[in-house]
Image 1 (cartoon, rainbow, N blue to C red):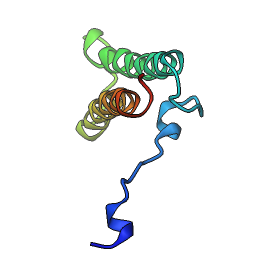
Image 2: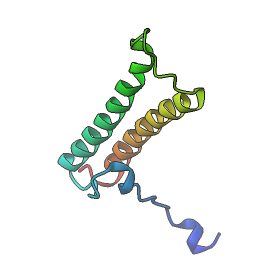
Image 3: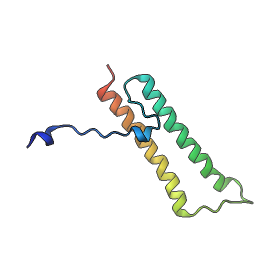
Image 4: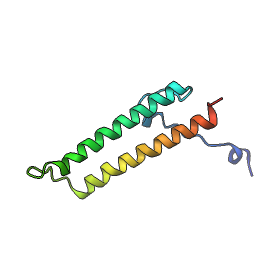
Length: 92
């Protein structure tokens, strides 16, 4: 096994957190989770309009609906990754 394979790999996901900040404190983690949650909530509210107005449906394609749901699943994974990173690397 070479030295490079022994190193742990850390993926920088700050672009997904939307803040550009490091997860170096409980406050930063909370801000990141709030941003992700707000983004997901907004996406789901837009999707809800697809089903809420029976007289004027927006007629989103199945592909679009799948993309919306998948984006929320990715956001949930981002929250899990952010908390995992914080617990492993930051939490005292």
